[in-house]
Each structure stands twice: as structure tokens, then as C-alpha cells.
Image (cartoon, rainbow over all chains, first blue to last red; front, side, top):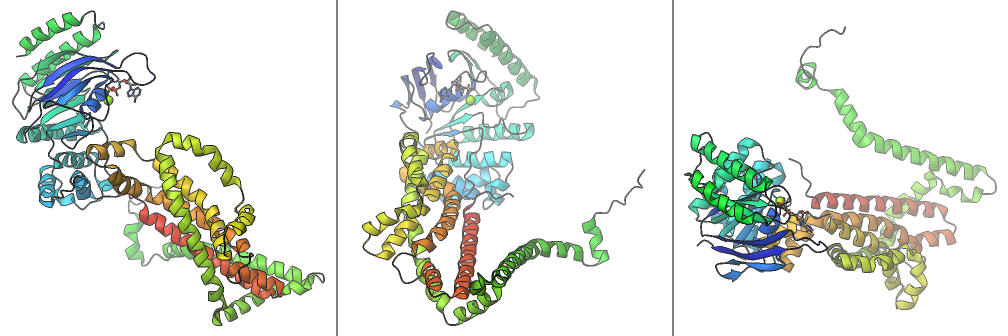
Amino acid sequence: MSANISIDYITHTFKGQSEPTLKDIALRIEPGEKIALIGRSGCGKSTLLHMLAGLLKPSEGCVRIRGHQVTKPSAKWNMMFQKPSLYPWMNVRQNAELGLVFNGQKDPQKINRLMDMVGLKDKADAHVQSLSGGQQQRVALARSLATSPDLLLLDEPFSALDAFTRSSLQDEVAEITSKEQLTLVIVTHDIDEAVAMADRVLIMSANPGHIVGEMKIDLPYPRNRASASFSQQREALMNRFESLVNDHVPHSSEKNADAESGNATQAAA
Amino acid sequence: MSTPQPIVSDSLAAPEGGFDWGQLGRFMLSRLGYPIIGILVLLAIWWLGGWAIASNPDTESFADFAPAPAFARLLELLANGYVWEATTPSLIRIGLGLLWAVVIGVPIGVAIGLYASLREVTHVPFQFLRMISPLAWMPVAVLAFATWDGAIVFLIAVAAIWPVLFSTAQGVRRIDPLWFKVAKNLGADGFQMLYRIIMPAIGQDIFAGIRLAVGVAWIVLVPAEYLGVTSGLGYAINDARDTLEYNTLAAMVVVIGVIGFFLDGICVSLIKHFSWHHEG
Ligand SMILES: Nc1ncnc2c1ncn2[C@@H]1O[C@H](COP(=O)(O)OP(=O)(O)O)[C@@H](O)[C@H]1O
Ligand SMILES: [Mg+2]
């Protein structure tokens, strides 16, 4: 089962700050959707993702997953970060099964399957510090998947990897989430990553952080980065981003942006 | 202009040229040679000191301090069991003192490492208490404890607690905040966070603190054992002085140094064991 998420008018002001970091964010995410959240560094993407994960409480509004308000973290919605954050005193397998250990449901066969899925079957007993960055991120992926989450939240998870490792991991995650019918929200500042992975891209603008528009990406998986249609979508998204984020004056042009959003989605389709 | 060198590395050339004695020599020197040189220098200074004492008529009666009589006496004391008799009670006191320091210091260290407010509240009192010489607690210890042994263990614990506590707290503060976030997200409760994440993360810091604590405790032990007790290394030193057996006194000093050295070695290997900084 997957999640449908509704974000109901979230506004967030960090302690000690006068201006809100996020303002009036409202959106719905359908079960099994793959969402990319793009925006400049510092516009509040991570903050929003932390709220989806229940790791941060919004000062106003709330997040609901299948109707239930998210108030604390849960293994049902799992977050991955730019750093793999593996525990160096555990081997690969122990890292991957940590969520199961916490929930008292160790399942060695499931871990074997996951190790196979992320291509680390022969590294299960290795020291995590002996793995490459891409392999470490694969362990983190296996760890996130082990607790069978409905929702995978990724915060720029591949931005520290080299281009080849990055694109193969993007494809793998897109494939796994399709196969397991997971809902995916990936935060990125990489247009290519958004086009490679998402069905729908949300564009975020800063000061205060809010969503200024969106674009559907209607391409089959796995996506061929060399195809003409990929380049078209990429260019369309780039143009949308430029027009929405660069020209965006907070609030006054909100209506404008929404209107444009409709046009560009049509143009892209 | 230099002539081009053949592109053959030493390690490839070695089998043809036979065994690399130079390398073995350097290895032996670094592993054994330097410590032996250090020990010889120490012995030489000791010997010179002994010679100076013996040749001065005013201090002649202390001549047994010199290495030769001291080592002769040490062999006798090892053979007749006196060394073990004196060492065992001291090691028990050290062990109990350290145990208390760990049992009290580690939980407090974890707490002040985790909670900034607790750290602020305790900062002044802890820095104040830490600066008091453990030996200054002696009158308090004597009043507060029914037995001399209890008082000595207390003094050792008072000395040993600070390095354990501060090293633990520092270790907790160095934990990557993402480690907490990830564990929370995976469903860790407070207890699991403590024993699956925090404790393994700071194992090496705790033992680094214990290593410092052993150093301080071992120094405090001897003067503490000048108190009422009639056993232990400190008592043995005091007794040897009172009975003017300077060779025994010097022999016991050697024993104290050697045991301290080994205790430190044990701590170092424990730190290594609990360290997760493996490369490769
Ligand atoms: N814990 C915090 N306290 C105060 N300000 C914060 C905190 N976390 C993030 N911010 C601020 O909120 C804004 C958005 O941050 P973030 O969500 O990390 O941006 P992004 O992920 O889009 O780069 C930034 O200006 C950042 O400085
Ligand atoms: Mg971010």
C-alpha cells in the first residue's frame, strides 16, 4: 500500500527568525506518485521534507498521510540524506537491517533480497568504511527499504556522487519505487535528476519558500537521457524554472505563475 | 643532468638481492630499539644519581637507592611474594575507584553531552570541583567512610571521575546529528538510541577518558595509601622509608612504574578495540 499525502497550508518560522521560511504550502500527492521538488539552495526544500518525515513540526498547518496527521517520525515514511550516514561500527548487513532491529522484526531473508536488489550481495559482511560513496548510498537505500515504507523521502541523495553512479542510482530508485508502488518525494537542485525520476516536478521559490508552479513529466521508465523527448522535457522545465523563479516577486505574481503553470504543462505534454 | 634511473621499484628488486636486512633493522629499531634506548637513558640517570648520592658523605646512607641494590632487592621481593602481596590490594582499590568513576561519570557525561541546558548548569560547579586536588578531599573521606579502604576508593574515584565524565560528554557532542535523525526515522526508541547508537559511537571516548583516569588514579593511589591502611604499594613505600630500607623503596617505585605502564597499555588496546575509525 502506498501513501496519499496532503499538505495543508504549512507555514514555518524558525525560532528566533522574524520572516517565515515556508509560507502557505498546500499540495496533494497521490499514491505511487514520484514527485521532484526543485528550487535554489536555501529556499526551504529540506525544511519541507523534514516536515513530511515528521522530523520537524510546522509552526502552522499540518501534513497528513492517509488522513492521519504526521506528528513524529515513522519507519513507514523514510528519509534519505545527501550523506549516507551509515553506522561505522556495524557491517553492511547490520546497517541495512537496523530499522527491523528497532522494530523487533529481524528478517534475514528480506535483507538478503534487498542486498541483491541494490547490488551488494557479496558486500554484506564488509565494513561500511571500505565502500565507495555510491555503494554506501545503496546501503542507505536498502536500510530505508527494509522497513517497507509507503513513502520514500530523498534529500539530494545523489548530489555527492559522480555522474555515472548518480544516473544509475536514479534509474534504480525510480525502478524500485515503481515496482514496490512507493510514493517518492525527491528534493534536488538538479534539473536532469528531476526529469529522470519524477512524474511531476514542483518548483519552489524562496523568501518565503513556497511552490510557484509544477510540471508533469510524461515519459516511460527507465528514461533515456539521450532521447529527444528527454531533452525537450528538460528544456521545458528549465524554461519554466527560469520564468517562475527568476521573475518571481513574492505573492504579487502568484496568480500569474499559476496561469503559466497550466500553459507550460500543456506545452510539455 | 642526472642519468635516468631504471624503472624498477625496490620491492620488486628485493627478492633478487636477497633479504632486505636494512628494512628489518629499521623495523626492529622502531619497535624495540627506541624504547630500549629510552630505558637505558633512564637507567643511566638513575645510576648517576645513585653514584652522586653514594659519593657525597652527607647522603651516603641513601646509597641503596641506586639501580644495582634496587634490582637485587626487587628479585628477592618477587621471589618471596612481597610484590604480589603489596600490589593486589592496590589494584583492587584502583579497580573499585575506577568502577565508581565509570558508573557515575559515564551517565552524567552522556546527559551533559546530550542536553545543552544541563551542560550550562553544571559547567561552573564541575569546573570548580575538578580543580580541587583529590588529596584535599582526604579529611572529608576519612570522616565520611567507616573504613580506610572506603576512604581510599573514594579518593581514587574523585580523581578518576572527571576525565571519564568530560571525555564521555565530548564524545556525545561529536556524534553526527544525522545519526540521531536516521535512527529516529528508523523507529529507535530512547533506550535503543542509547545502546545501539550512542554507546557504540562513544566507546572509544569513554576508554580514552578511562585511560586518563587510570593515570591520575595511579598517581593518587600512593599518597592515599599512606592513610591508615597496612597494605598496598603506597603502604609498602611508606613502610620502607620508615624502616630505612631504601633498596626496597626503590624496588617498589620500579614496580609502581611498570604496573602503571601496563595499565596504560591495556587502556590503549581497549581504545583501539572500541574505535570504529577503520580505514579500508
Ligand atoms: N534549524 C534551523 N534554524 C534556523 N534556520 C534554518 C534552520 N534550518 C534551515 N534554516 C533556514 O531555512 C532556510 C531553508 O533551508 P533549507 O530547507 O535547508 O533549504 P534547502 O534545502 O532548500 O537548501 C535557509 O535560509 C536556512 O538558513
Ligand atoms: Mg537542503
